[in-house]
Picture 1 (cartoon, rainbow over the protein chains, first blue to last red):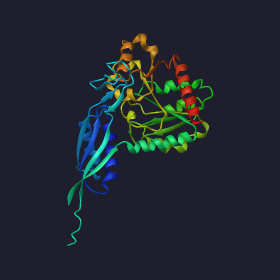
Picture 2 (cartoon, each protein chain N blue to C red; picture 1 turned 30 degrees about the vertical axis):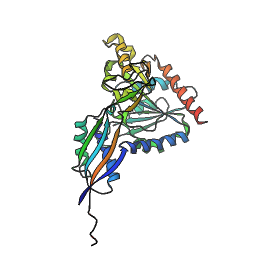
Picture 3 (cartoon, helix red, strand yellow; picture 1 turned 120 degrees about the vertical axis):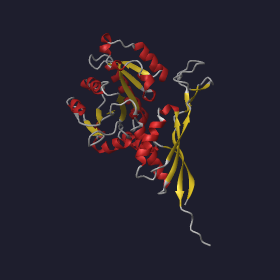
Picture 4 (tube, rainbow over the protein chains, first blue to last red; picture 1 turned 45 degrees about the horizontal axis):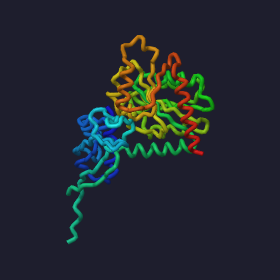
Length: 117
Length: 228
């Protein structure tokens, strides 16, 4: 259900960078830990985009797996809920990736520069 | 007309986080510690606050920012405890936002008695998903999970359970009437957020409320100590 709010946040971010140009595609990195349902985000994106520069734009979501690193040197990709280090049992592993909710780039339409020849 | 790629590389929640930082700076300037209190609807946030505030916190002046989609029922309950309460509704119409964001809290700043309080408790809209995404400028996040919600909630809502600094396991007085396995709940909590601080409480009997009071008191002290 938070995908509605998140879709709004994506579009606000994109509009600031589009500088008035029509957006045809949005490339988003979504970390595993963000608990985002891709289909749901796409659905809301399409609706919230109406009447904005993102109207009709394609939303490309790259899912980033969660990786954790422990002080003992062990690094692993999260598979389910194994937040605790299986090597030493420590609870405070650092999240290396998987928390992204990043607009990586956008495709916009741009007028050809006027011909001066 | 041709198509160009624009590199952005910006967290889509940056706008919210920027406003949250501005809120935080205003709270800092007034020496106010802020706690974001979150839970599912009906977990007992308001009742716990009533239990907490009935006897107050020694040497700490508390204010409450009450977030609700509609109405001021909770604010009215708390106001009877002679605590400054500010109501924030997320939508003036029928059905609004399911969470508070930094901008909503910012809009309420002029209404808050920041000069007269040391601790502001922001009671978020009851919801286990969206509030976890939106920082409002808080120092700490406390979530309430009641035993009636079952053992599996940490596994179903890991984002919320991972984002909080303290989990209050509420409605402990109901345990004799439930088939809930508390040990399994605590195990699931530990799986999702290893070693997160937790307290077993009952807003109804008052069990555990003193421990929470002490935790809040120490948070305020740590923060004002850090500011000096």
